Image (tube, rainbow, N blue to C red; front, side, top):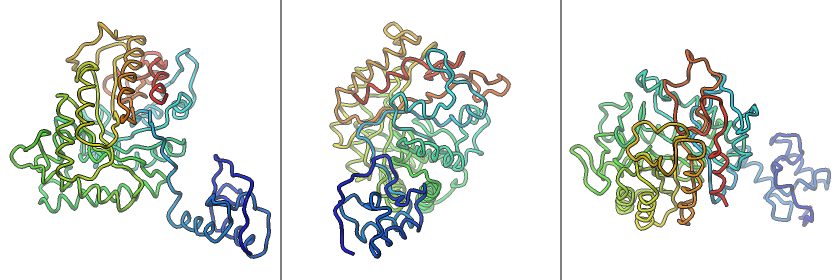
Length: 427
């Protein structure tokens, strides 16, 4: 039949693979294309240029076949990301939490509401076997197994957000103070530990993709400034390692994880996520990552002024990270108290930013202003913004204590002003 140049562009919000417009991508769409190419049936002419190259050819049929065989390709990822780690959203919804906007009006569906305020990305954590965690840890939020994350991840993707998956290679919290080997991998040889990391990461990726929740970004470990899977993968960020660990071991474990990601989802970007109890540590850590040839795409950083210091320290960490690697940077966690200090606060900025709605708001505005001075900072995520016990009976509370850095007031469910200021990062 030949080709035909199209003069009518497709709507950007349509599913370009749904040629016949029935709401699904199936073999019927291939048939519709064949009907045009073989018989000249122009019923679906306006929607037949699947590839968007201006012609209708066998390439359009091939594109649909690829979708049928491999699933929908990932949507383009915005250059700048702003959002939050909403790993506990499911639990608050199940508990009956009542969310209100800043004026006290009920928010019936909180997930799209974030998007209406300019947010475009969400982060979710995943533990290996959280059923092995202590009861205390479970009551702190260690509940995210793969089934939980697949369901929440699919909702996030369906709502149009970029999805960041945060792998804790542990059954419970993994952070600078603890990186415990999952119980199922305990006692394994180093070779078997590498295999476990590879097989687990690959299975997670395959199941997330099959569930319609392909991660756009993935963290291979959580706050791994001191390495992962201790003691074997433990390191000092500036070089060397405690007895039993080494940078060679850490690099090998990271290679197992990154290989699994690259094999299953080449479009998924890899984040290495650290924190900054000493603002020189992040730069030193990434300098070593570069020297050991570790495969990653983004430098991730946690920043809490309560523990890490004021914006001078944040700036110092960013400058050193920029010197260590040419890769982009994302702030994977941040937070500030809206009524009380964060637990364990060691740096009190309440003289400048009171623990109030207004204080949290202006902390957020000024943090973003500092981040915008660094053009390679491409993402900003608030930690646990959805925390909200309003409307939940205290006997059935989601967690044992309130997270003081939420973007909703646990007392009345009202959104804090800082929630609405986060979009400044995109400006």
